[in-house]
Length: 373
Image 1 (cartoon, one colour):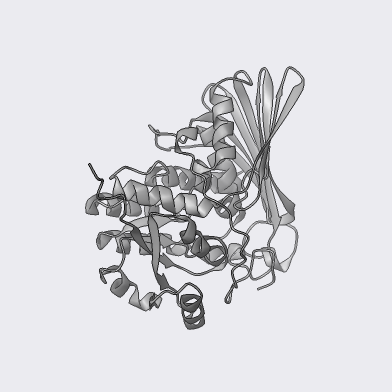
Image 2: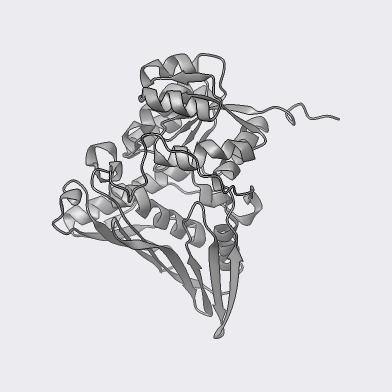
């Protein structure tokens, strides 16, 4: 019997055409067989014109015409890559028009916004997925299996460093647009600790440090945090906008440890160093198109009427933890976390690989975080 969904493609509008959308998302649709890019939404007319030509997209919309895009009948889903403070508004508006939503992380900048986004999706019967691409990535999901299988014994601690240089003027340094180390890169460390421990933190403590530089006039330069998990496990991490590029984590058990290098990358190889009884095994996971995997997974959830694993509750939990960490920074005290139990966790069963491409798209009015605006 033929499955009528086999040849159907989910039609997407990409909303927000900044650096990551142009560099990673737009080119990914060629590797996502069940997904099709049909519309672009941006407040920049030059981006709309140039990128529509580059990707042969007929339909483009300004932000003020977003509702027209949603009600056009041309799209089934939106991929929201807007600044963090706009995620809630544009998700709710899409859900209210029965359009499915794949929203970049962080889900929003407040718990109240996360609640509104989840309610809109539930009320309108649409899928809401938060773009945790590493939940589909082989290197990270195999690390989950190493920890779950107790190859390193009982997991006791997690430690991570995620740092990069962010140039003055970059949106990540603007407080009113949801910038800050925890929202932008600390969220990766928080989420990794959660999927590796397969649990939720109960208490957090954090401190921030900032050099006197103009670029850090609105947000902190770096943050260090301690997260207490059930069964007396600890997760620690430091994230920084003012240090060399590093993105590693390590889980230490009572019999061994696993160290993952370039753990959070979206475009490069990821390496494992698994040490048990003093012997280390190395494994490399070659680069692949993580965004294509993400679109493939979300489209399949829509076509097969399955709930996405990186759900609105997953995104809500991270925002809850981030808000609690900032509360700890302000008070100088540990703070209890009130988050949601997760019945479904990411595992290697949902791993998806799509071929990487060596093509470098031409960027229009967009710059990488380390480039001067």
